[in-house]
Image 1 (spheres, chains in turn blue, yellow):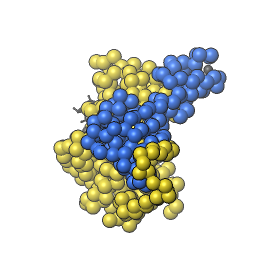
Image 2: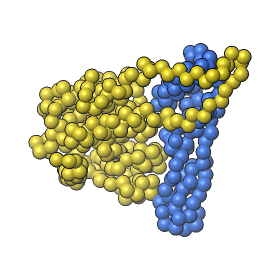
Image 3: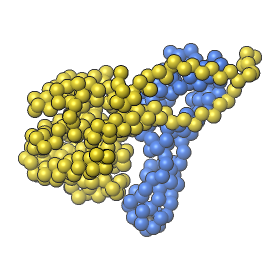
Length: 115
Length: 257
Ligand SMILES: Nc1nc2c(ncn2[C@@H]2O[C@H](COP(=O)(O)OP(=O)(O)O)[C@@H](O)[C@H]2O)c(=O)[nH]1
Ligand SMILES: [Mg+2]
Ligand SMILES: [Zn+2]
Ligand SMILES: [Zn+2]
C-alpha cells in the first residue's frame, strides 16, 4: 500500500497550492494515473478517502482520475497497439512477443479547483 | 547536516512561504481552477538523483535488491561478502525487516551495515536511503565503501515504483516461488537491469522451467541481464561475482580520477 504515502504527498502539495492561491477549500482534484505507474487506482481512491476525511482543506474535495492509454510498439515490425487495458500478449500483426510500452507510468497531479 | 551531498537544500521546504496573492480576492465563493501538471513521484525522484550524485562523488556503486520475502536476498549478500569481501569493500543498508537480524547477519561478516527502521512500510524511498547512507558512513569501515547494497522490503510491487538512487536494480525470484513472477509483477522486471533466479539447487524438486521464466522476463524487458545460481551450493555463483567486479570497475572507470 504505497498508495497511502503517495496520497500523503498529494495532500502536502494541495496545502501549498491552496496557500499560494489563498484558497480555503479544495473542491476538485484531477489526477492522471498511468496503467503502468505501479499505482492501484482503487487503493489510491481508498487512501484519498481516508486521509482527506482528517483534513479540513480537502474534506469535501472530489477526486477525478484520468487513466491514459498506453502505446505498445512491436520491437520486430513496429506495429503499434493503443490500449488502456492489460499488455497485449503479442503483436497483432507479426506475433512477436517483445512489445515496448511508451509512457503510461505517470502519476500526475493535473488540475486543482479550489475556493 | 551534511555538506557533501547538499542535503540542507531539501529540508527548508516549508520556510519560504511565497504567498502569490493574485490581485483578486476569492471571498465571494468563486472557485479557481489551476493547472498543476506535476508528478507525485517528483519529490522522490529528485532525492534519488541527489543520492546518485552523492554516490558518484564518493565513487560508490549502489545496487537495490528487490524480491518477495525469502527469495534469498540476505543469503546472497552473505555469500557475496564471503567470496569477494576482501577485494571489494561492501556496505549494506538493510530495509527488509524491522528487527536487526539481517543487519546483524551482515555485520557478523565484518562489513558495515545498518538497519533502517521503516515503521512497517512496504517499500523504501529515497529519503530513507539518504538518511541511512549517512548513518552507514559513520559505522566502522563505512567511509571506504566501493559497493553499496540496499536490501529492499520483501515485496515485488511497491519497491518497483521508488527510485532510491541506485545504479542497478536487481530483482530476485527463487525456484520454489515458481516461474510466473515476471508476468504477475511486470514493473519489478521492466524497471530492473538484472534478474537473478536463485536457489537453483532446488530445481530437481520444483517445476521451474528456467528458459521459460527467462523468456517471459526478456519479453517485458529485452535488456535485462539474467543469471541463475544457487548461493548455498555455489553453482553458477561466479557469474554474479564477475558481474559485480565488472560493475564496480565500469562505474569507477567513468569517474574523473
Ligand atoms: N536451498 C537454498 N536455500 C536458500 C538459498 N538461498 C537462500 N536460501 C534459504 O532461503 C531462506 C530465506 O533466505 P533469506 O536470504 O533470508 O531471504 P530474504 O528474505 O530474501 O533475505 C533461508 O532459509 C535461506 O537459507 C539457496 O541458494 N538454496
Ligand atoms: Mg533478508
Ligand atoms: Zn505497498
Ligand atoms: Zn510485430
